[in-house]
Structure formats: C-alpha cells, structure tokens
Image (cartoon, rainbow, N blue to C red; front, side):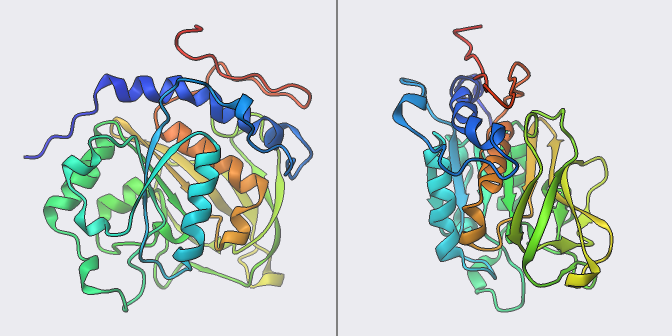
Length: 294
C-alpha cells in the first residue's frame, strides 16, 4: 500500500512564509467593504529568505474557460508569495510528483459527458490523491474545480461542496453580497462582507461538519432558491485540510479583492497554518510572526 510522507520541513515552510500572505492581504481585509484594489503586493511586503508554500495547480480540463482562469489563479498566488507549479494532466500524477507539494489546487473537473478518455484516474492514483491530504497535505478547489467524479464518494467528502446533478443549479451572473459567517476562523478573521458579480450556485451537495465560512442570499429574482447558500467552506480531512471556494466563474470575477483574499488565505490555511496570532483592524493589520520571531 502506498504511503505518502510529509516531512516536518513542509510544515515549517508553511508556517514560516505565511506571514507574507497576511501582510499582502492587509489592504484587502481592512479597507472598505469591497477591499482596496490598489493595495497590491510590493517587494517590501515579502519575507526575504523564506521558502514559499508550494502549490500544484491542476488544470487542462474544465467545463469553464480554464485557459483564462489558470494564469489568473497563478498570478494571484505568486503575487501572494506562493510557488505555483501547473499540472495539465492530473491523470499522470504520482506519489513522487506530490512529494514536494504542500497544497493541491484544482481548477480541473470531469463535469459533462464530453471529457477526453485520458481524464480517467486509476485506483492507484485515487488512493495516492486522497492519501496526500489525509496524511497532511492541503486541498483547495475553486468554483467548478469541485465538479468531478460523481460516483467517487471519498472525493466528495474531501471536497466539502460539490455539484450534484439534478439538484445543484444557478441563475444568471449578477451582483450579490457575500456574507462572512465564521468571523472567528483563521481564514475569515478580520474580513468584511463584500459584493461580487459572479455565478451563485444553489443546492450544492455540502458535506456534514463542514465549516461554512461565507454565504450569500440566492434571490428568486435571479432564479435562485430564496435561501442562504454557501460560498466558502473549510474542514479537516484526516491530518490535512480542505478549502472550497465556489466563487470564480471566470477570470474577471477572480480579480475581485474579496476573491483574492479568500484564495490566498484559504490556500495558506490549507498548507497547515492556523494564524491564531493574527489580528486585523480597520486601521492597522498585524503580520503573523514566523517561527523564528515567536
């Protein structure tokens, strides 16, 4: 049986460089309700000499425009101080390929009946993929990156919120307000509600015990349910962590400061850092001390 080890260095890497992401996000989190789009990354915000969190971005197949969203996701993460490697053929993943990875981020799916034959995953790969997270890795999905493997129950359990055929749906893209629900969670601490023009899913298949970090009202005016629907979720999976962000239908939506904040914070949290010492206020965000400073 395959066993994937996550050396202690990986955890040290995650905790050492994570202060960077929160310094970068200070403007987005502490500005007005939509964040400050001008508070981008500058060289002085980077921690010098710290190894970045290593993200493997899965793409190459999606019922959405992955050719446009993949470079956008890569740019957001790299500006936040992460190291991003792109995998266009997830069906080729091996345990060796994942040994130097801290977080898998899926912008890839198997939704629909037109997927190419090479989308099939072997049982060995499925075991390898789940074991990566169960044994301490991070797993992040963005929007339709959750819409894969309708008959693979463990994948759905790990992914937290997935598209269920015959149940899940959405109306047209429109402006809606994202409400921060779990304000004490490390990902959302200090964040404010924000407005985004995006696709709002409803009746997603949500796994029990998942922490709903943010939600939005699905308006009947826009063919919604008239109910509050989940937007961002987080939960542990074995010794690892999963974060799901249902925003981000297209690259344009990913440029929204609130989306960027969620992506960077959620990916950082999935890498294994709690950020328990992070404090934010409307006036002065405080960076997380790295291990050498504690």
